[in-house]
Length: 396
Ligand SMILES: Cc1cc2nc3c(=O)[nH]c(=O)nc-3n(C[C@H](O)[C@H](O)[C@H](O)COP(=O)(O)O)c2cc1C
Ligand SMILES: [Fe+2]
Ligand SMILES: [Fe+2]
Image (cartoon, rainbow, N blue to C red; front, side, top):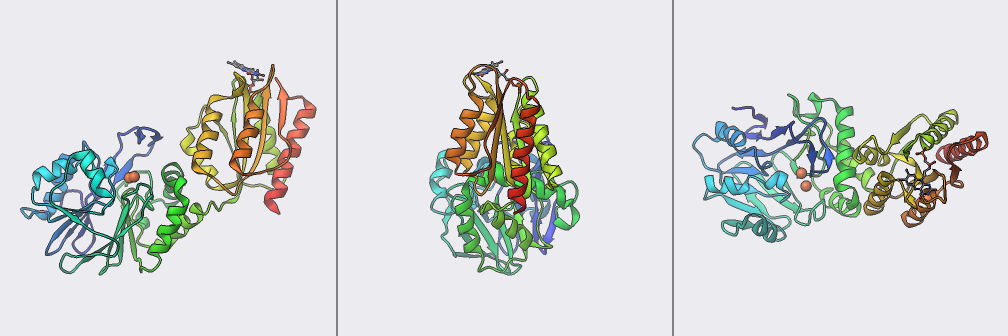
């Protein structure tokens, strides 16, 4: 076996760890890499569940062949068409021309348009069964988690859910592949980052998927990125439930945009007041320094959100404008919001933050604090008061 891991009898992880890619979807930083998990079931029939991103084919094939030797792959289960899981399908099909590609009705068009593949398709709908021998696969579409054709595959004998992107995390699998072999604090953060960055907009579809899957007994979750959850799969299911309902913890993210550091000083004043008034978890981010990916991750965790911006060409500072646009797209709810900012001529930062606040539907705490150029003692007092108001709201 060439760097594969047997996860159950005759069921193997044949995934790839990618530590080179800088940006996932050419957008989200991968400081600690990412894994493309693919699974191989070697029964009377051989089935491959999802593939890997383009560029990894040689290594991937070597892994597969070290298990199947000269057998063929009978079925390729396509749970999701995003190229991080479908990129090598055309090459695989050239190498295994008889392979049957298992798809749902929403996959057809996407498969054809990406790879011009229309033959040897095996169409399944919700609840359909595919018997491999000892193992039996059942298919459940979970539309818009996070693409229209997204689907999960359930193996009945072992009660294993191959969940594709659902329950996936950033971060490569460094030696261990199971939850009990890895640092869970790190992976819970990376899972929430993945959720907020990629899946966050689709809270309602996630809720629908969780309802659909609630009738299944699930002993192990095998996602397409990050750890396999075999010790306590219910834990990640409850995290998905929490995140998709936009439920949050007591804590505050302060994020600001500042050129000369005055708005940054204001952020620090609010942060000190929050801690003084009993909030233990306070994260302060400079939007120019920390990638949006990490800021969203923490906004998904904490109930308090305080945004500050200096004025910039009658508007918000560009990274803050970007953040607010993203928050509206994602539809983040159930947050307590407070605003502050800074200007020298006619403003534009705070006034536009207030427009954002109205569109967001978030509950505004206190009056915005806007200062001219640099905060004076009376401004600092207003900022401390704003921090106290937020702390009191969070504690009540
Ligand atoms: C490119 C640029 C555009 C600016 N646009 C505005 C503006 O539209 N309205 C305004 O009142 N101040 C504007 N300013 C001034 C800053 O917002 C102001 O000096 C503020 O105090 C800077 O806060 P900071 O110290 O947190 O960077 C601009 C400054 C720069 C460099
Ligand atoms: Fe995806
Ligand atoms: Fe993915």
